[in-house]
View 1 (cartoon, helix red, strand yellow):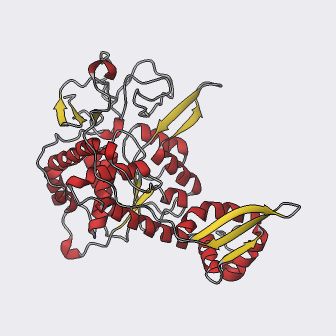
View 2 (tube, one colour):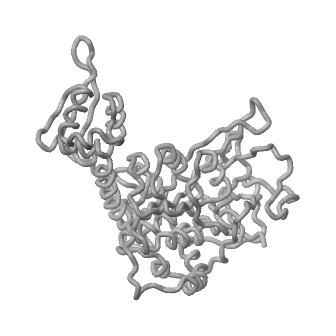
View 3 (spheres, helix red, strand yellow):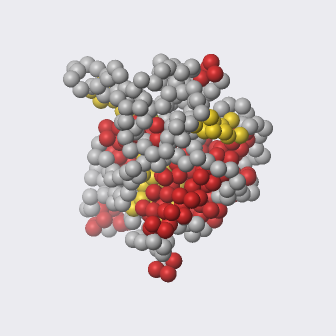
Length: 451
């Protein structure tokens, strides 16, 4: 049908001849035809959220996914068996980026993760038991925008570049995010087990969701339009790590909730994340225990390693999670310093004496605060934003610059492993699409999704 949704500050509309090319990846499914007049509360009946704050954060995450640029926070779902984590993940992806294989296992290398990002807008990983350090770092790059280069096949000097910023869903029974850099880019939701008397057959639940999906998408598009209008005048007194996400969610929220509802929920979620990461890190927990008995500690990394080991006991100090050298301890402290500062523990590194001995100083300080209520939203802006084709998974912008971004600085995914000279679409339908006019010529400045 090749139709698309176009959005700007005046509203959203379905158009028949979008002035952009689309790429159809294997597994992609069409978005439903959006219908106005829905209620966001309808979505709540399909998500196992236990509080208003959790629902606000879930909706804010979906609105971030509908934006034409990142950063995109990682949403992390935790809960015991029977808490509908997989269903929660599938619902979110079906609403934003339908796919025949919505949930997948974690990839085993960076290359596979970035290839998945070229073929879908939302990446959902199911039943995650733990995150190795390398994939935690890669997810950080994927949340805020990053790239990956690999040698091109059958070539000695050419490279293939993968560049992407994508929303990610992780679900698992345990607390799978333990590194502060990823936790600072994440939204955490804990799901309770669904009692047997409240369970419903899967076929019945999906039939009800499919009936409501067009209206739910319509109300989300209404909020995106409002966000486009309000964003230029939306301000936060303090900006968190995911500042663009916080500003965008605050700009969109006023039609759904009172001003500041998102910020209050987000700050509370971040506070809980800080406590969870500190408890999961034996070094951070040991530093907090050490400083509770004094206001300042100063010494070398070797001295601190001995003091912390004495506090935690021999068994913990000989575990694999414990640093095996003063240098390793310094690295762990630098990684944990941001979250420790949020709970009132400042760590500084310096040099003292004639020989410039490296020292570490730990002091009690005032805990960092995440900010204040947002200001009133702004007047409309006329930038046009559009959902990308079929599902949001194939985001592609035409009229781009040589560096891989369009005239508005929107990053795109670039991948051409074999330098194929003719597009070989999954169904062949796109193989001979005639060129369209560029956004600069026809007035489009964003991205679209074919319905």
